Length: 202
Image (cartoon, rainbow, N blue to C red; front, side, top):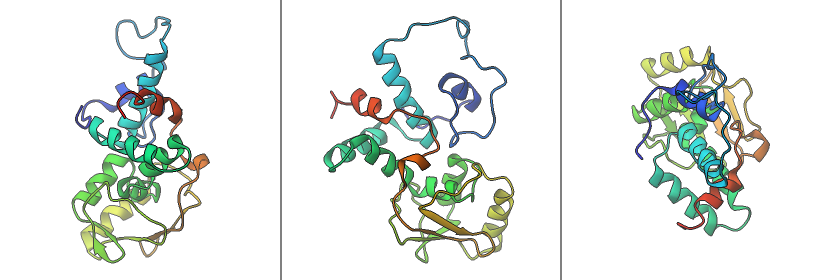
């Protein structure tokens, strides 16, 4: 599947809270559709599929991109599930979002794609850029860029800044101090089930 561009609250109703996709909360607590209020017994496959879809929609990935991240996580030493989450959390668009420069990950991706963000003093317009400890992420020194971020900072998507990041709201400059820890991942997801879902494809 390609990147999702449809109604976001419909996805939030089906999969639960997706902080990276939308800040709005659905008024109805049950899934959309004719049988949304009916009790369904879900198979093991359906549960794994749902966990995978949470990652796809929250981080705004295509199926091919997520599969690539899963393969990379499985090749690395350590817990594949945790490494997968770290790879996704350390993407530039997500880092910009977690610093509060954008209200959602799609908003952060737009900031990056339109050239409003620099990494270590150089403009980077690739949303999937992997941030590393020591990277300095800043807003481009242009009035339009600063005004956009200034407006977004008034309504941040998430209240708390993770411990691996720092951000100066006056200078519009942030820094990556380390790798994100599992407890600071805002999305409620069972990452091991995602690894299991892809186990036959990897």
